[in-house]
Length: 112
Ligand code: AMP
Image (cartoon, protein in one colour):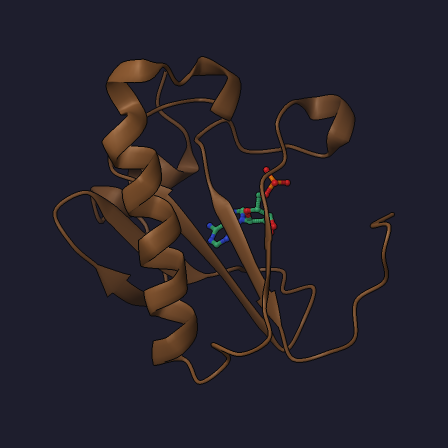
């Protein structure tokens, strides 16, 4: 089932897109939790990381490399955090796999 991120991929709703290639798209989060907060999403509609499988191995690797590339491009490549929320209980609200790139402030560990 398509989500709001599917609409962004299909350009049905606007987004502040910072990177795109054949397999993924990166755009600024509409409700940023840090000075830099960008989402990297696969164009393939995988709801959660838990729904990915061995056939998605190359795509998942691609997303990590794309996240690094976007961080470098945005000038935060030396200090950024990646977050993947998997499941509503841990805060996933959009069921289209996405990596949060967060940077530009101090982060606590463990995360809350
Ligand atoms: P999560 O809670 O991990 O599922 O993250 C979903 C993220 O998507 C949240 O940080 C939202 O602020 C963000 N979000 C929801 N709708 C949009 C949108 N239309 N454009 C950009 N970011 C969005």
